[in-house]
Image (tube, rainbow, N blue to C red; front, side, top):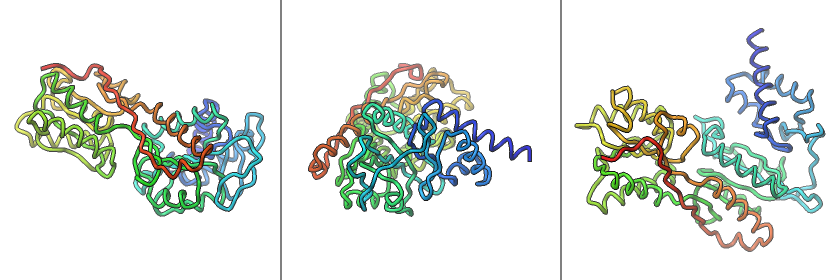
Length: 371
């Protein structure tokens, strides 16, 4: 019993802290009981007790058939305006509501734990607050139906993130809901993404300028177009200089720290000699590679240089501090909101599904040494 009490108290404290620090804003839908249970490793009874404590303290409101919503600062429940049959808010309330849907799969209960997704949500939420827009996020997999959310929540517009299932994009467009795709590209919808081809190419140019030739490439999940474009940009630039990836391309199924670690260990066991440099398509992969190199007795950057991708907060706490490509997430989120507001003002813009690319920037730190 003591352990159970500790768990629900810990869950209560964590959610309360997130509310007080602004990670969950007024009117935002909390993750479902199932998602909270999977994230914290507790059962639903524990989750429900923590949510009840939050409700008793007037921090959240339970809306039947909808979920748990963060209460307004005065402790009042969120009031909602009428909704059309398509899930689009009807006139009569100045505050718009925008849905922020992240992709979900069976292995990862809630990808909001991914650093890039967390940052994009936070930055988009900031953009929304500046324009009197309420943002509600949720995870959506291919087995779920968008209509299930539209029947219970009321959205003026939707931001879909990354590898969200195509059927959800199609349904939103079919219903005429103003929508944009963030951090990915599909030809049928306005898409806001980073220039991954240039990102990969700029890493190749940088390492070549530093005198490196035996450059290993560590891929993320190739299902992602972001990953494929980074690989293409990097490899194309090497080809221009008559080179190819040292030992071929390693990885390709995951973005995790563990994948970076295991694939780098495999590379060190298979290659005739260690690479002089490594380009990882994501920072977590790079951090895993860093650990593998260090365990093999190789010092970064003296023996091998590393460049990551995303310029994440975690990479900046590494030792050495990781040189990485910054995808300019703030510009991505701001551009997505401006595109959505443009559709609010002129719905015909949705019939011109533009692809807007934000240029990346290579940020030098301490993990690369010239040869």
